[in-house]
Image (cartoon, rainbow, N blue to C red):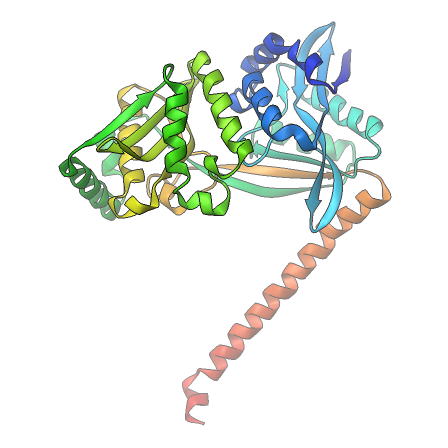
Length: 383
């Protein structure tokens, strides 16, 4: 029989460190973004506005499933909503239920536990799950069986590169225009002189982060507030996790320098034979030299040479990533509504009202296009 318990304080959670990662490694969602190391660093930096509500599934005292959840208050469609979410934000890239067997029964037991013990919660938000994965398929089945009101939305589309050939063959597969750009960037940077790439993995981690932050403060992401240097929380998280990841052998930070001046960086992880491009940035003052492209080119080539299986861009399908690959890994987001009055209102808003409004705006847009076409036709012009 499956027994569910909730852990609401970090001290109790820390006691499960070893068991947590053992479950993760045996699950279908093995990713560093669900490791105890990642989540503990994340909680220290970003968890201040929430409360832990991690669900542990046991069978005969053995932990067979973990749901890394928290209670928090979010803004949804302009409304303040009490919610249960994964311990994640836009830095996280992947999340999900970690289950080693009896996946349907475990997730069903977890959902039932939430429904019974969290009646004051209006919304359960399960984001950063891969479309078509066990998590996606099973959660969809469980919610339908339980007759819980839910809406599934498309989330990010993360580009990735399969490294099953070699660098030369891979370059032949990109567009002719982009291939020419790669050649121009390589020649330009090579001929510039004083160009080096400093590589940090286990030593001088604080030095690497200091150099990275110099670049991060001059990136386009900084002006948008999403760069590592943008907030104290971001700076603290990426520095703390870098130290932990270095100890685990996951961390790689590459700093591109011109005459010892850092101008671009790659903060990436090597995990389960995959390179995960966690953060990329370059100094906008050097944009004409395409330092980001140069650094990516060297890193992807290195991944081929070291026989890695995949290069995962993470994040969304930004145009600069799609120059490298057409492959994307789609993610889905589940909005599950509690059977409270406010939960029902949120469901009506999300399932009926919002789609209706979108259709109205779409119709108005099409109508305007037809009016413009009619006004611009030769017949009307003559008249």
